[in-house]
Amino acid sequence: MTITDADLRLLTRATAGFGTVLARTDLTGDAVSRCTGWTLRDVANHVLGGAIRYEHYFSGGDPAEVAWSRTADHAGDAAAAHHRVSETLNDRIAEHREGSVTLHHPLADIDVPTLLVLRVQELVLHGWDIASVDAPSVTIDPAIGAFLLKRGAPVRMLLRDHGALGPEHDPGAEADLTARVLAAWGRGL
Figure 1 (cartoon, rainbow, N blue to C red):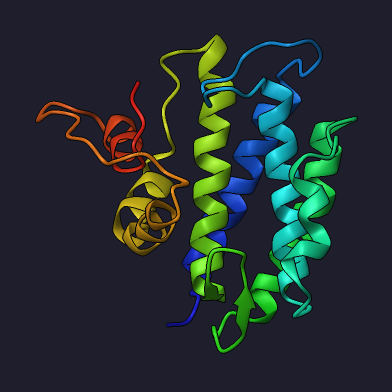
Figure 2: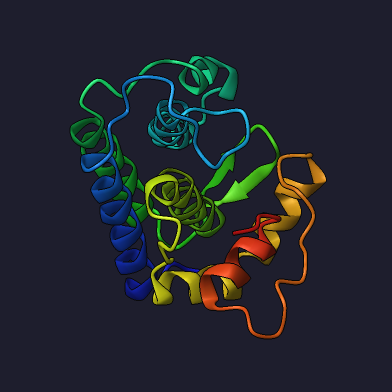
């Protein structure tokens, strides 16, 4: 599978959306996010560190070399840091869009199209984890939500197989797109 121009545009939208969430969120203090056990700052740091980790995987290096990025405090000026680390990662993804590179993720060896889906879901779900604290009715971008539902099943399976994701549940027949995406990833409104 190759990464299309439309896929790259969705990655850019998801990246910008998370940047917007960071720019309007106070990450100081101990405000709790919707991600169980994590503060808003913890979630921001995890996503910022994710860009560092994912970019490192392109070097073929050992994931353990960047394990520090899971808990490091990257969120001094979170929006600026997000822009900087995401730009580097997004460029790497675009350079290898044909998907022929194997990346050594700690959970499994993956291709670049899978990494793109991992990154989009990380940006979208963790953006929701932060934004929904102050705005419970915040919704997921419809184009990105549809992309995640269509292309996210292998990523969800990988994460579930390693205990990194709760079980999928039925959001109900009347559920909107946001509720359906959250339910697919084992989350609820």
